[in-house]
Length: 112
Length: 114
Image 1 (cartoon, each protein chain N blue to C red):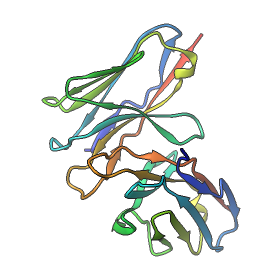
Image 2: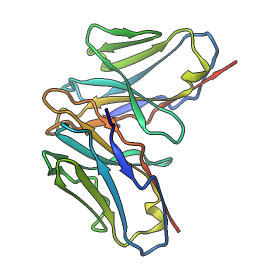
Image 3: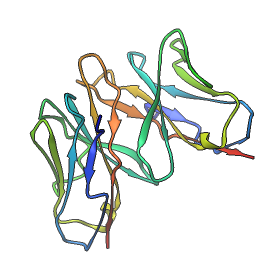
Image 4: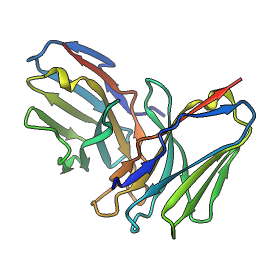
């Protein structure tokens, strides 16, 4: 089983709609969770951290479910510019230091 | 503030040649990471450093790959000799440490080995 698993998509989303997707992680000792965004032929960029209580950043909402070991990302009022691959990232609790494990990404395509 | 800087941005070379990729992390960050990304394998961690010391190089594919960090503001990833299967985008990332483990990526080096 992969440490971090994501549905690769693509999720085809009409502009203005809401889209949500999850990722699951295998290590129950993981403490830090992030969503990164990667545009085509660009580097991954930090979108938001994910906190235990859930958190929002504008149109983006992240949730953490420790019991079921998954995190989610919800995008409201989707914009064309939201088209990207979203990477679920979890700290590797077994490793020393700041090692993170990246999921394979969920591709989102927002269409007019 | 300057982000992570990588050079060159693109490199095309022939099989058997030596390739050196360079990275300047964000000032004050304690951790530096080298990743490789391909369509087939996704993002793979090759090696990472803490305070210039290599911590985990288990992701380095083979002896043809080596990485150094001679000081806090510079790191290199060297491939010698290069092979076509090394073609990928190589990212460098840095992380603050001190209980903050989010990573910030450079723009990457797109390597093509012919």
